[in-house]
Length: 209
Image (cartoon, rainbow, N blue to C red; front, side, top):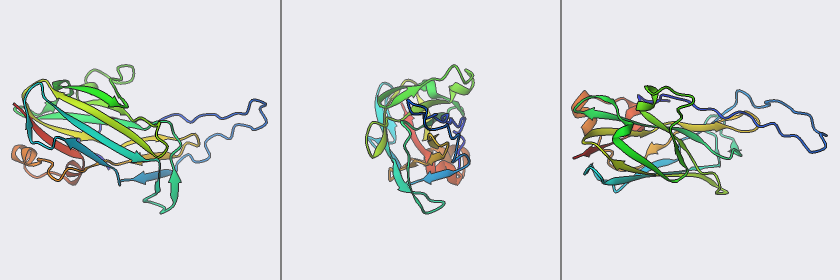
C-alpha cells in the first residue's frame, strides 16, 4: 500500500540483547521477514476546515496501538519497539503541482518532526518530513503535529505508512487512514480528475489564502 507521497520507508535496526553475564547468546533476527499490519488507526485534522489563512494552523494527530490483531495472520501481536516512524508528505496541487513541505512550518507537540539531511537529498526532502511517534504510553504510539501555513495555494497532506522493526526484526506496518468525514478531495479532483484509492485513503486537502 502506498501513495504519491511515499518517498521513503525507514526501518529500525534490530537490538542485540545480552545479559550482563553473557549467559545468553545473541540469537540474531528470529522474525526476519515477518510482517504485522494494522489499519485501524486514524489520522485526524482539526479544525476540519477546507481553508485557512497564511499564518493559521491545523493540528494533525493520531495514535497507533501497540497490541492488535494482525490483519494478515489474525493473530494477536504486540509491538515492543520504543518508537514508530514514517513520512508526512505535502504537495502543492495549485497553482503548480510540486513538492511543498516548506510551504508549512511543522511543529511537533507530541513526538518529533525530523528533517533527515544525513540520509536524504535536499530534493527528496522538498516533499516530506519524517514523523517519529512518541512511544512512552503503555498502549499506544502517539503523534501531534501543528501545521502552520506559510504560503498561499491548494495543498494535499498525507501521513503515509508508518512502522518499525522490533528487537526480533519483525516489521510492524501501520496505515493511518484519514478519519475526517470530509477530506476536501474535490480540490484534488478539480485539478487532476479522478483520484486513486491510495490518495483517497491517506490524503487531506486544504486551501491556504
